Image (cartoon, rainbow, N blue to C red; front, top):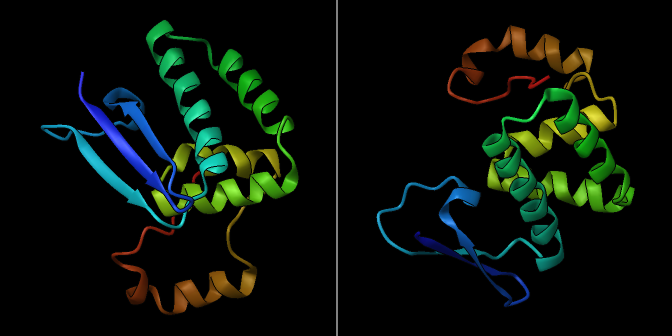
Length: 133
């Protein structure tokens, strides 16, 4: 199986199987993540490995939901805030969605921002601003 190497801001190196990163590279790959600390990435890898196992086992949604909630409860609010920043940076929507549900965030935008989005709809045509509930 192909490996992906991830080099962090603090110079730590992670090697992961391709299936965990959901990457379709044709050979082993090195990715620099200069805005990401090792501890935060290890949480994200832990989360993803659990989800890869869920897919393999075809787990029930309730089981996944329970594990997600337990995972979120085991982290501090500061860790979760940092994780959402890293997940946004790495475009990992499942973690963003899970953290939003944990904090009961229904919408990313205020009513004023929603009005501006509608008024200037053309500015958001190629931007992914969907609410992933």
